[in-house]
Image 1 (cartoon, one colour):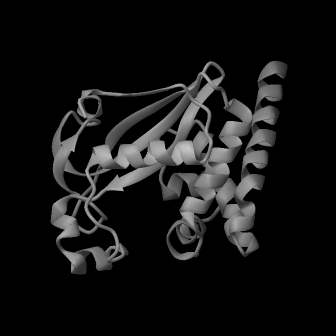
Image 2 (tube, rainbow, N blue to C red):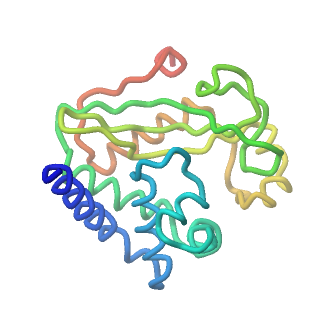
Length: 208
């Protein structure tokens, strides 16, 4: 029990250190607190993780504060990602590290979520109504984590600018293949001086 409690305290302290890297991206105290509560919920042993369960874990009466932080309050997700990437390099950086490219699908209902359509989902193992994200992971002997991501927008979306605008997608966002997204993320890692030796991916990317 003593060892478990020490581990919990270590995790809690380090989570606050991660939070400290990007807390300045939020201008008010409420979203700062909600961001930390959200992170704590993500690593909590919950069977399901959604706005309601994360809010309950944080002791909130409902999911409104979490939803406001994610959907209404202005903050730049790319800037936060930059902060997190620097934290990863500071703690896991290794010249022998491996960058891992992969995509995954998120099952959705309806047609309004950005990029959603019937398309192949590796998670489901079949064609489903879903969004697809392309991710870049950083793997070393000391740990592994995600350091970049892109939302795949099918041509059915990028050819329909009105639909894009309704989903908050700017007119400057053009169609990109998943391979192009993977290359852009690797180039960004190089530009940001992320140390690594290899890049690996499955055949869908490796044949390119």
